[in-house]
Image 1 (cartoon, helix red, strand yellow):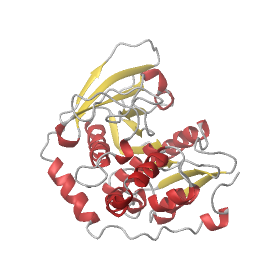
Image 2: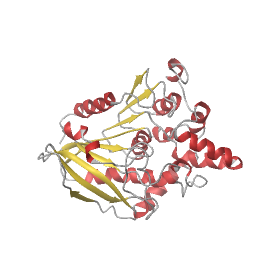
Image 3: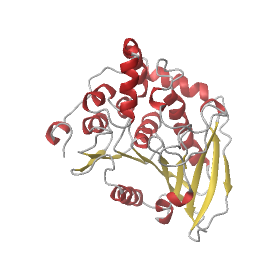
Length: 322
C-alpha cells in the first residue's frame, strides 16, 4: 500500500526547507577539529568457527578520540587487493556477531562493518559506548542533545562514519579505487553523509534512507524513531524551532546535494518509518550519477536480500581495479 504521494509525484518531489547557511562551514570546522585526534586503527584477527572467511576485530578513534569498534570480514586466504564494502547500520543496531555479516565476504569482498556508538540494544548487539563508560542503550538517540548542533548525538556518529572510511583506505589488501559505502535506514543516511563529505568513494548504495527531510517526515508518519522525535517535540513544544535548527545540520537531503560518487538508491512505497517522499527527497537532490529501485509492495524492509544482491552486482561492475 502506498502510504505517501503517488509515485509520479514522488519522482519529482523536492524538500524545500532551507538548509543552515553555515552548513558547509559547520562540517568543515567539525572535521578539522577532529583531525587533531589520531585515527590509531587496530585490526586484530579473531578466532571464529568459519572455514571460508577471515574475521578481524577493528577499533579506531572516532569523534573526540573515543574508541569505536567494527568488524572486517574477508575471504579466507585471499591477499587482494579486494574491493571494500563499508556498511553502516540501522537505528538501534550494533555490529553484532560476525555470523550476521557473511554475505559480502562470501561474494569475494572485504566487508567493513562499523559499530554504532551507544546503540546496539534493539535488533543487534553493539560494543561501543557513548559517552565513554556508558554502555549501549535502548533508543532515544534521535533527540539526544537536539538543542545544540555542537553536542548533538549525530555529530559524533557522522564523524565516526567519515573516519571509518579512512580506516578502510589504510587497511592492508584493499583496492582504494573500489570502496563502496552502503547501509539500510540510518545506515543509508550515513552512506549519504560520507558521500557528501568525501570525494574518494567509488559508489554509494543507500537503502530506504532515514534521517531525511525531517519536517516532511513528521507530516507523514510517527512510526519508528520519528515517533520518539514527535513525542519530544510535543513535550518541548516551545523549543521546536531550536530543535529543527539543529536537525538542519544533519539532514541527509543536504548531504545528498553535495554527493558526486555514483549512487544506487532504493525505496519501499509502503514505508512508514522512512516515508517514500523523504527517501525520494534525498535521491532527487543528488547531483551525481544515480538510479532508484522502487519496491512497490514493501515497507521499511525494502528489497531485503535483493538489495544485498544489487550491491554485490554493483561492486563487481566496478571492474578489476587494483
